[in-house]
Amino acid sequence: MSGAPAWGSLEPRDPRSLDDLLAEAVAAADPGIGDRIATQPAAHLELVALTARAHLATEELLATAVSSARSAGHSWEAVGTALGITRQAAQQRFGRPAGPGDGAPGLVDDLIAGAVPGDTRTLAPVTALTEMAALEVYGRHGWRSIGFGAAFHTIERTTQQWEHKRVYVLGASRFGLEAEGWERIGTWFPWVYYARGLGTTPVGQRGPVEDDLS
Image (cartoon, rainbow, N blue to C red; front, side, top):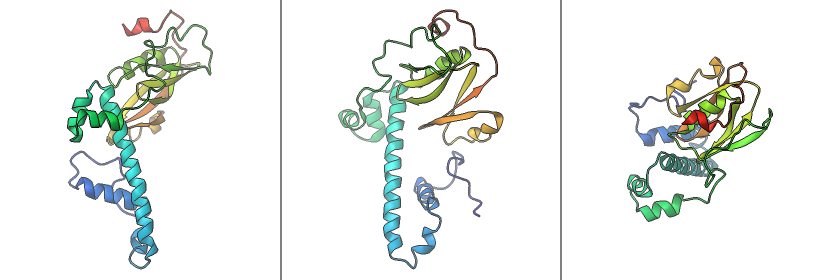
């Protein structure tokens, strides 16, 4: 078994080039292909298919990275500059139709009133700069994130308080979190989201949760 670190555990100063790391990640998806490709012509087509899957995956990562940058307040002009293309090209390529959180009239009004365990709501709009503060407040009131996307979180009412954590997808800090009771919600590049139940009764019904965010 190789002693090389798994993808996602690499340190920022890893001496290998990005090309090397991507090639290793593709090869790791099918560990036997390196042996087959030397003797089996069909393995070359398998490599084409595998690399195509990797290409689609990196396209999705790029799209979510752009969405994250937009959520952090960057303009299409800035995104285009980072990509080496024009503002118009960036917006045409990565602009998307309105999602569940787009155009919502502020944070969900008074989630506490009338909600029972198991109810879900859309918390929107939130940004990369505001989502964790919002989740902290709603977590105290018994809500936990169960899904997310550009500018929104889907949250569920429960019978206990929750805390939420967001860590960089390549950061070593995410390793060991599950052993500490954190539940992985999912990944929205460049972040991985976690939630952990506190086992304490939610904060009482004191009116709109927005009051705590002011």
